[in-house]
Image (cartoon, rainbow, N blue to C red; front, side, top):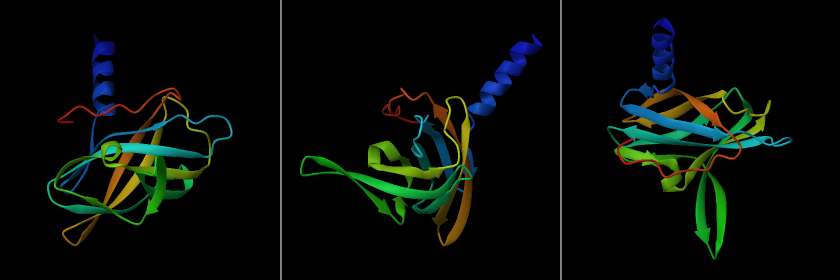
Length: 151
């Protein structure tokens, strides 16, 4: 019975969201890296009670952290670094909106089952917030799926 309780508690801890102020971050994840790969993309969902702006992020897992937009232009996908990402009031999936976070210059490969620490820098109503997030590392073969509504 204790093993069952411990397992349930552990599962609850893994599924917890990160909060700071009126900002909630869920479903943060990155794909495991292939041998020799020193970059990784992070996808996540941010919910904010008010309009806010993601003005940066960092991670102890890499040398540089960048925010990128993806757009479809002239039949090609183009990735560009952005300095800030506007967060509307409500839910915003980075995947659906065309944004993602990039970990550049990884200190070690990302392995499935690990977790990557992130600190998001959010500006909301003139206040700067730091949101600590743990991104789950999924197997290299994982594909991005459209998040379910209401997540």
